[in-house]
Image 1 (cartoon, rainbow, N blue to C red):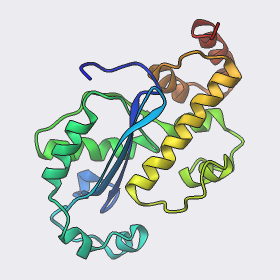
Image 2 (image 1 turned 120 degrees about the horizontal axis):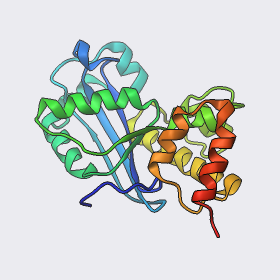
Image 3 (image 1 turned 90 degrees about the vertical axis):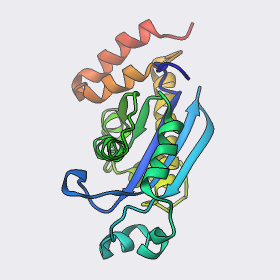
Image 4 (image 1 turned 60 degrees about the horizontal axis):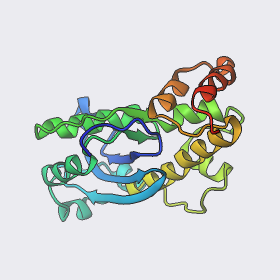
Length: 214
């Protein structure tokens, strides 16, 4: 893939598990999981633990189930992130709470002079606009609320990426059904996340006329 494609159904959906909340404070990624979808179909997956070169706090071990013993046997971060940079190519990227994953993706790639060229969209922000009546907009809550899966293995990277994929595809389906979209640009999903809730119906109705199914 040579150039970014402005299709919301052709993206890579990713998730990191990390040693903490901030790469600026020295936290590192310890697992990456990702799902590639092309025209709405899963075409590839990526998953790997990675040895961050530092010990993982006890809380993170308990929270994720990723222990220091497991990471001692994992490939080095440079190996994993080099492979992942090749995997994502120029695809646009999606994550739930994307600001977090974007920070870690940028930081990890910068350690090894690699870069990515796709744009990011946040499934959590889009879900807040499309589903204001949801109990909350945590990934697990939204997956259960929509009855998308009975998988409860959250806080592992590939499982979370898989669940985010189901949610992302559900949102695309609902936009097609409710507004008669024939195609949904990736840039539209970004715009939904930035649009105020009260303005969203008129915004989508206007966009749907441009991208309507005939």
